[in-house]
Amino acid sequence: MSQAILDFMMEDHHRLDGIFAKMENAKNVAEAKKYFIEFNYGLRRHIVWEEKIFFPIFEKKKGLTRGGPTEAMRADHKEIKKLLEGIHDCVAGESAKEFKKIKKFEEDFRDLISTHNFKEEQMLYGWIDDVLDDKEKKNIFKEVENVSPEEYEKCCE
Ligand SMILES: [Fe+2]
Ligand SMILES: [Fe+2]
Image 1 (cartoon, helix red, strand yellow):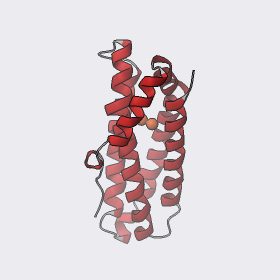
Image 2 (cartoon, helix red, strand yellow):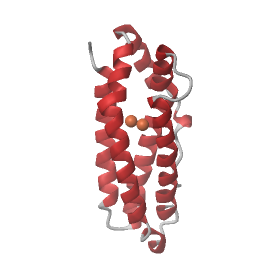
Image 3 (cartoon, protein in one colour):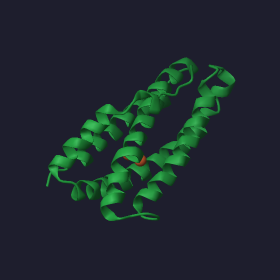
């Protein structure tokens, strides 16, 4: 059985981790903002893929309505978005004073995203791969390509 979704999504986690690390190492607020915009855009796109495409087909195949692993992941996404807003507010105005508050948000974010990604990579993505055949996966990746940027394009301009 191929592991298309696991591989694809794990690679995106790693790509996003790289951008996040650049933001954490930024020397000033303008630099942090530049990486935050890229990170925010990429992570929101990733969450849209999960919540609008991968999770619903898994829930349908498993007959899940309430509870279950996807509901827990959706709850994590809500917390993740709150922290993204917190980081957003630290860089949006490009003020050095606000920028000083970013570290706490970055630490909380890192803790949350590392457990979240671990759960997805170690369990959920593999389960999603298992319930789909190759043809279904092919169709799903077409849907991924067709997601409109309007669904996730939000940033601190
Ligand atoms: Fe997720
Ligand atoms: Fe993910």
